[in-house]
Length: 190
Image (cartoon, rainbow, N blue to C red):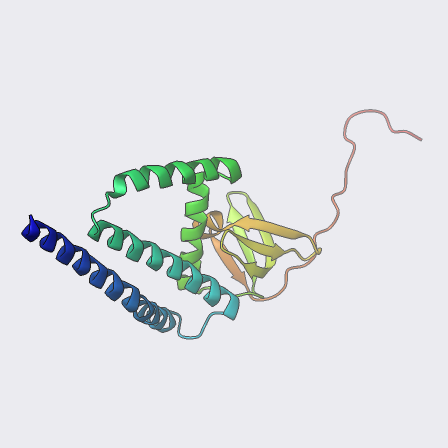
């Protein structure tokens, strides 16, 4: 009986030591990911986009380390995954669609790495026969804020911004004219 208790105590100490190592290695992993991010963007990104990408990477890294520690302690993640996915699905249905949340966050990371446009660029987003023109005001986690020549603001989802052709314009487009309504059928009023 004493041998079993001793082995159990040593196993618990071993798990505590590995958990302590994981906690101490987490800041080092954060530094490494930050350096890799810096290397990938090479200073071509504004501060706000960089901050958001770093925050998203920190959250992902913390989640992965937490899952690994929980697995090491012998906690099955099936129950946690079911609980987490259920909560996430409820949140997704309550706020937006779950695919939209994930696709917009993924699209933000793609836009961050792609680096083909910046805040202040004039762009034209082509969607079939239609298009939207505007100056990029903000590149957020979920959407891009465009300001039209006429002063209107357009909130465009990141997932659509990545999947549609985007033209970066050399100069500011001309303001749109008000539509002229012509009466074709019927008598003229005098």
